[in-house]
Structure formats: structure tokens, C-alpha cells
Length: 590
Image (cartoon, rainbow, N blue to C red; front, side):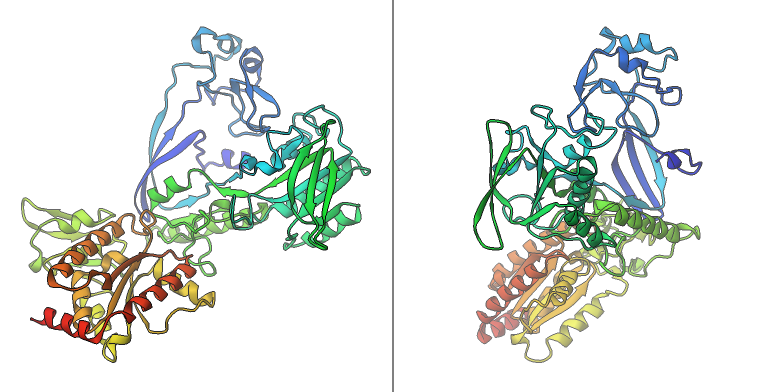
């Protein structure tokens, strides 16, 4: 971070939050709120006199509450910039002013206010980090009830030379050196009841590292690791695992069911031995919970801001897991670190370098080539009603409804969702590569033979179509009579496509896309909902069962959901008789 802070082409905005992003690749406009530090960071020399004078004491977040700090503080050692900051929610303000009087350089200014910064950038790298799982939910382990039960983060600070105990391991309750330590794995990971169902990736090796550190401090200490599986998959990881076992660390397959505190402060742990099915009890001076990883709390806010997708685990979803592992589906946005999934330091550094390289590759020419999947206005047919501009999620269409000038599309801003073409009542918009004629011809071809046996499905490219692909990769079975028409977004599915399909004998139709709030095209699928509701009302008036037109939200990671929805659609298709199909054709032909 120090190198980044000194680099002439890097501007670090610390204590800042991105609150708004608009625009498109090459021209993103970001609104950043830079929180007031109340200390002039360019003048502060981090001498510490202000902190020495401050009378207010609060728990230190960096040391996970195991030590204290003042209201004016440096967040952590080697922080960039190396300058103090004041937490005004804790500070006594000008009524105290002891820090102000102690500062010889007069760096402290209680009148500072938050600053709004507008920046224009060509690309974005999302590196939102992670949050540790809160083990208080798993009450059976007694965290916060028993002082000698600590998390892996707290343990990390306890054995760190720069930590609150200067690297001397001691029990929090009586400050004695423990003779035995137990580690419980998968706390908040790989669980259907509490925490996440996914593996958090780093926990096994973090515990193995901790056992090695403990053995370096005290070779005689007794260490027991309670685990489900040890996943030492990386380069050199198996060697570390073998080394840990050779030093006498006991690895016991089975997770504790209960933890109770003994009168001397030690922990008694009941564990089912997975090898023989017996229950064993272990008395330990100290217990460490290996915490899992959760997505950052700001993930959902950023996801809505940028129109990104999330996996079922809550992490950001990449455009392609193999070919585009650091790219978002939104062009010009890239992922780094644990924003995309749990990672260790090596993987995070690798992905950060890859994201930087992808951003450079995109921008180094000074011009950006765009996909030809954009909308085009036929000026002679445009009535300047303004509906296309209203529905465009990227504000890529400009139309003057008063002067009645034809709509104009900014092709650089257009992302190709096709919502404008589907909503245009005059057929004045052509969606390149997904034109009306192309899609109608696909419907004709797919329903040309035995249409009564087919399930016609319109699938959004980024989510439900990718979900179908994921179902295939996962070897999930779904009915073979499904016929998929790919569109870039469910918002492209025009009302006339539905009527044309029913008129050609389709028994059932499915329109599928991204979950509400997860749309690749920001809010385009909201218009899908309104359009389907409108068609349902027309179907009821015409005497056509509205159940024959279904709307489903399926993400790219939901292969199982895709398979289940298709099975339900097949059940629905079997309930549509030949007479009902014939009657529908007659109604729509008249």
C-alpha cells in the first residue's frame, strides 16, 4: 500500500465510499463521498502526541477488541496515509480539545466536513473484500459465553508479535499460558443450517499455519484439530499438513456437538469420532473457532449500483468461470480478491494482477470497440413518443417528444438488452442480431413439427441461458423437448413473439431471466414483469389460460433451479390438450 500511495499515477481516496455510478465502459461517472478525517493528512507526522493526550478509550477494531485505542488514532500499523484520524462519534469534541492543544503542527481541524468527489473513469475493479462469519449464531460453541473460546482472528492477534500480548499466547480469562489448545474447523462453512454451504477455502490452511506457530512458541503444547475434511489443495499445502502432524498435532475427524466450561476455565468438548462412531470428551485450556468467510456487507448495494450478478452464495458472479474469470458481465467491470469468492493471499494477488491487466488491455488504445448488438432507430417509423427513452436502463436513447424529432441511440452507451425494441409500439427500433424477423423465424422453425410436444423457452443470455448451460455441465436432467430461444435479456421478449408462438401451436411458453435486482441490464426485467402481466390480462379476455405463459427467474448459478422449472413446465404441457391448442389457434387467427 505504501508503494501505491507514493505512485504518481495512483490516487488513494481513503475513508471514502462510492455512492453512485453511472455511464458505460470508457465513460463511468462515479460519485465518491470522502469522509472527514478532522486531521490534515498532508501535515500530520504521526508523532502520536494527540493520542497520548486523548482521554477517551474505545476497543481497538484492528485487534478485534482485545486492546484499546483512543478517539484519535491510526487504524492499523503501516496504514496509508500515515496520519491520525478522529472518530467524531467517540470524540468529546471542542469541549475537550486536548488533542488540539497537544498537536504542535496544528493539524487538527474540528470544522472539517465530508467532501463529495466526482470522477470519470474508463473501467472499474470491484475488490470489496470479505467479512468473517459471526460465530455467535452457533451457540453450541459458547462464543462470548466462555471467555476462553476465541475466534481464529482473535487468536491471530494474540500470537502476533505486534498484537495486544506482544506475541505471548495467553488465555483471555486468567491470562495464563494454555497447556492445550483445540481448533474447530468449518465454523460458518459447509453447513446447511447456519452460515454458508460453501467451503471458505482458507480455514484449513490457516489452522495448520496456526498449529505450526504454536509449536514454534511451545513445542510441548498439546494441540487438537477437530475437522470434517482437511483441504490442503494448494502448492506446498500438503507438506505443511504433514509437517504439522509430525510435530504431534492431533487431527480428529469429527466436529464438537457441545462445549462446556469447567470450574478452572478450561473447555470440555464432546465430539463424535467419525472413525468408529463413539463419543469422546476432550478437556482443553483454550478453544479456537476457525471462522468461515462471508461476502462484504456492501456487496448488495454495489451489485444494484453496477447491475452485477451474484451467485447463490452471495458473491459476485463472473462472466465465465473459465474464459473470463475476472470479468463481470457488465463490460468494463472486473473483480479482484474475495469479491468473487473465498480466496487466500496468493489467489487474491493473482486475480488482482489479472483484473489490472484486463483493465489495461481494454483501455490502452484510447478507443473502445463495442459489440454490434445495439439498437437502431428507423427514423421514418418513429413517432417520438419517448417510450424507448423511458425504458432504456442506460439512458442511451435521446428523443425530444415536444419537437417530435426521431429518437437517437448512443451506440457506445447501448448495452443491447432490447427492451426498447420490445416496448416500441410502432416497430421503429431494430435490435441488431436479435431482430424481430430473426426471432419469429426461430419460433416458426422450432414449432414446425409436432408443436404440441414442445416447451418453448425464451432465455436471458446472462442468467437463465447460462443456467441451462450450467445444468448441462452439472449433468442435471431436464425434459428433452425444451426448445430454447436465446435473447440478451428477458426484456427483449416482445408481446408479438408470445402471440406468434401460440398461433403456431405452442402448448406452453416460458419467459426466463435474471432475478429481480440482479439484472445484467440494471432494471430491464422490471419491464418484463409488466409486459407479462399485460399479456396475462389479454389472455384471460380472449379465453386462453394464462397458466400456459410462465415467467421464471433463474440465475447462471442455478442449474438445479433450471432443471426443476423445466420439469414443472413439462407437467404443465401435459395438461394442455390438443383441443385447447386448436381453440387457441382459432381465437388468435380470427
